[in-house]
Length: 285
Ligand code: NDP
Image (cartoon, rainbow, N blue to C red):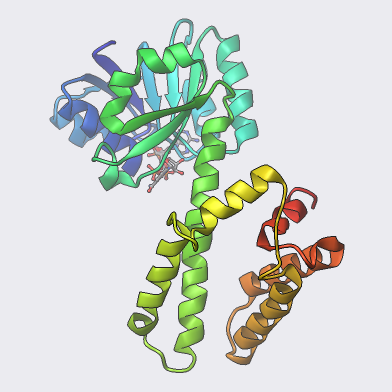
């Protein structure tokens, strides 16, 4: 473990990361393209740098393009870069090769909390790259939250991050669609809320309505029993839902996508299967 860390990128995320490292007693160096953003951290004891430098650089920027721009001409031999910025898994894999070509090591990461959550109990980030490097720096990285090593493929951290974000965004957006649908008949958001809370809670439960567990088991087994609720019945139901949104004069992007996906699953031989069969369509666009 080293007690020196450099934070590259001082947007809301990077600046908070630097604060958490300072709180934990680290010797913190900071660099940002717009140098003035370092001032509050320097006032707290961080060292400003002219260029990104240091054996361990923790990067948090808009994307990986920013990393290339920031590190142009910097000697990366023997350096460990931990990049917690968002980008596509492909870009992360290419970046790991690029850093290795410069003699350094890239650990990729996806952090699962907004700035106020960084380093708070329950916060975590997915990390991918060489296991021994992640292990060597895990105590330092723990200042940002729990360290979850998901494997050596540099794209994995972002795949886990995006998978989580996709469930988060789509669940909350369908909640907003549903709230607007009730609202079209004058139902207040708070009146629908107890039922939405119950549904979301049940999906994650271990009981008979624990659909996340149930579908995960079905997908693993490749079998999607549909005797009690068939895909054909759900495709027809999804059409009714779309009609409801249209009749209410609402935006229909998501209800249309749902109907299209369900209808295709029904049409392509899974009409008697259950909801899990949708994954077969997703795997075969
Ligand atoms: P931004 O995504 O807006 O990133 C801002 C930082 O990127 C600034 O330091 C900015 O420098 C730098 N930057 C952008 N382009 C370049 C470039 N070409 N060269 C050098 N530096 C550049 O802010 P956040 O802090 O919110 O997010 C950082 C990362 O964390 C993002 O990838 C985001 O997706 C991810 N993330 C964000 C969360 C959030 O809630 N905010 C939650 C989880 C992940 P300058 O100051 O000079 O403009």
